[in-house]
Length: 237
Image (cartoon, one colour):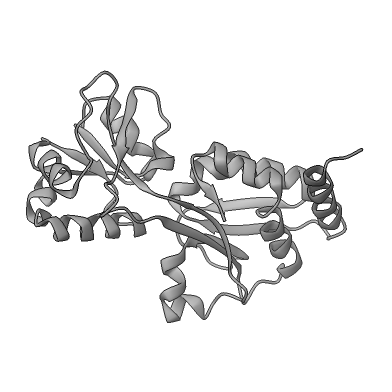
């Protein structure tokens, strides 16, 4: 007898295979690169659709999986159809080079001391996560000091290698991107400073591939997708 989870996944996949195969253009948050490296081929195999994933802006998109903050922007939201679906969420943390002492991050004061003592910090300021980190710096009164210490990275996936190579002493970002060799998670932000970033999926209001885009979003809610989200260091939903 099939287990309930297997039945649910099979039903969704059966529905997807009844949709004519299409090429989907998806915008995804840069922090989701690792997740979609695994989920993309799974979706293509299950649905027959081809998934073209972009981690920056691109014309004529069919769907998005982006930070929930995007949906607070009226101009951006006007290009997306309802309903929006919550896919995953994840918190913030700090990494150090493998073997380095792990700093005390238990309280905001201890966290502040760690930031001020660090010689350099790798992060991606030009991102939704980077914007929240900047607010934390401002709250702690270290915004100017951290501007001078920050080793700006183009992509979230380059933060861990920067720390592993010694380019930066610390890495600060969403914890799901910290999966490269040569680094260790020092810890999460203290509770008073922690905030989870949610990623939300939606179909483009202008897409000509609405059924295929909806199939992708349905797939992201299957038990198999939830397992992949957990394996990527995130929490489903």
